[in-house]
Image (cartoon, helix red, strand yellow):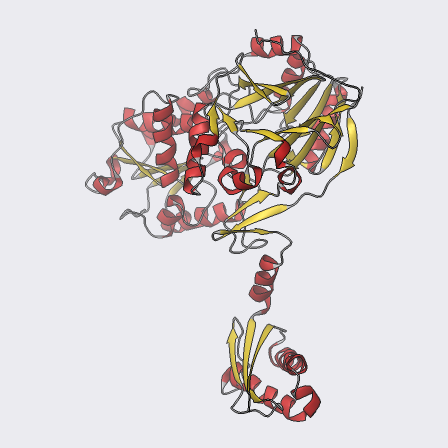
Length: 565
């Protein structure tokens, strides 16, 4: 039994919840709990996740995090950061944001190791990470007493959080499923959940990802037999891809291949790192022998099994490289077998489809999740959510980890069970102190982009300008002028990402140089003597000329160099 703390409490103290990321979207999880007098609340931050960019909306961006501005401005009152598990959408931003948050990080051993690696990669002090033991052990973090409750998921040591406060118990599920046989990691324990609920749960903040799935979730153990049968019948070189963090699946795939006499090699840094971390932290006790890719080329193709990264179509990952021609000296041939032991995350359909088509062109036999034979979800389905709510018996449910349609449907599910629910997408401040919690205020939330080595705001205009250049092309104009505006040399124009009109023998650049010179010759001396005036003349000439010639208005940059006499 956890030790109950005695909390001081006054009528002016409020207990609040605020999602900065992850509510109304899938990814970038970041949740904030506050307790104390308004304006003096102490805070607990749960998760600092990332999501991944796409070429349509965020070209050139490396990673995206929720903007922590609200809590960063109150960092002196942030008592701790709690990480529920080691998936990128929960821990991936810790190295990018720790300087702004400046608080200790609490996590279980496996997750703590991943968090330290994120910090080390960004040259931050790793001593801020503090390892905790699982429930019923608890940790005091400011006015909060936090327990890490083992939950089954698609990564080891996923944890829900029991957050005890002077105004009641919060149960924050994190990501979870009800798996009695997860193979690697801890099984779901209904008795533990029932006991936690019996002690009273004021609010359950709950994963909503699979609320629309009507059938009970399946266990990781359910697909072992199917994978074994596949390995027995697979032809040629056999490749499988899945989420790199799903250590249980990696082990199942590797063991099935090993049992059929295949040698195993792992291609992709993320998978190798996860397997290594699994051993280092004790969550992975054994794994079939692995052959280094540099040595695997000596093994006959029909005797080899490759675990490859890139189940979501990532262009630089091993799966995309293998489908596109080769990786580490290996290439695929007609008759080989490629298994996607994963679900395509919404938004990644085009990227995954590109790989599927490339494999089809080669003649590779492709197996995916459509049959339901080789993958099970890591999230609780609708009947599983019902079971958890019945075990915990919370006074209130706040759906999280889902798009808005998921939050609304989960709220409807709670209502059908007679439980009060609050739909609180990102930016909604919920007062948990009220007899029936409700949204009392809203704050601005947003995104930060990792662009190369620099963190930029989504509204800074940098990515928007990049998109404008990608869509419209770019024209750079260079002028050398006297102080009075007389041209000292020919206009120089460079065009990027723009076609040349068929009736312009010298190309678009030459055509624009002539048009700009004509426009400048017609401008007044007053305009030519002013840099802003010259820039307006040139931009108008470029827009008019390119619109007429090729139907585009490019982004134009004008460089004016004046010779002082």
